Length: 112
Image (cartoon, helix red, strand yellow):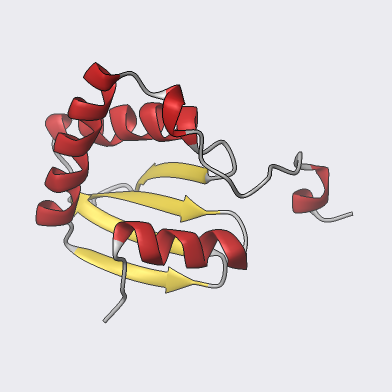
């Protein structure tokens, strides 16, 4: 059995009402910051890996983004990663090829 086989299946649908208007304002600010500050984007079969500067404020913003995004889009898989000696924090987002297509459209992600 693959690890993915043990994961619950979620419908690929967002619940936009899951985020309050106040949260939506903060979410929009974080999304704009993410777009402006991403160092690079790497595509993988089921999603994207985004590299950011390793700063305490970066980690806090990305963690807040994940918290808010999971409210409306529970089908997304996230990971934050740091490597010893690296000056970057890595945000992975994905879940399946369908989720990857969703992310590409909503987040305007591209590895090019």
